[in-house]
Image: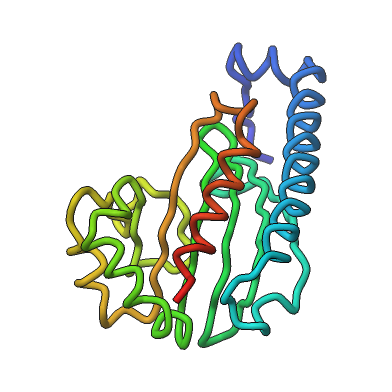
Length: 200
């Protein structure tokens, strides 16, 4: 047996004896689930209005999932619409990332990338996507906008124009966790903006 002892730091020792903080963490995740549940209902109501999404995109109801290890932090995801195929993707992902932010991401790949990409390029060229992050390379399911795959759009369309040969494209907005009280409204606004972008 290895005689070396696994020791705790003072901070770790304090935390391991205190159950309240982990119960608080569970309570926060439960509240995010509830928030996303309400948001999903609002999204479905929004899509009862006339829109131009392909009908197959709405075959699946909203899905909320959670985990503990996105870059070692807990997370909750709401996917709606969620059309994920091996070659073709059209999805809007609403993401809560502990210690970081909320985000809203439009994800297009394959036939949907081909169908809607030119419209996004036009919007970017007109400066209407300023403030959005664009990802068209690197890891497709990377949702850390600070990563190398993302470019902040600011008065230029190069990030989208240069992505013409990319099989996928993602647009993302982030929302500070300090905006918790307004999170549902801001996330629904982002969702609605994405739906409008897909109008032909």
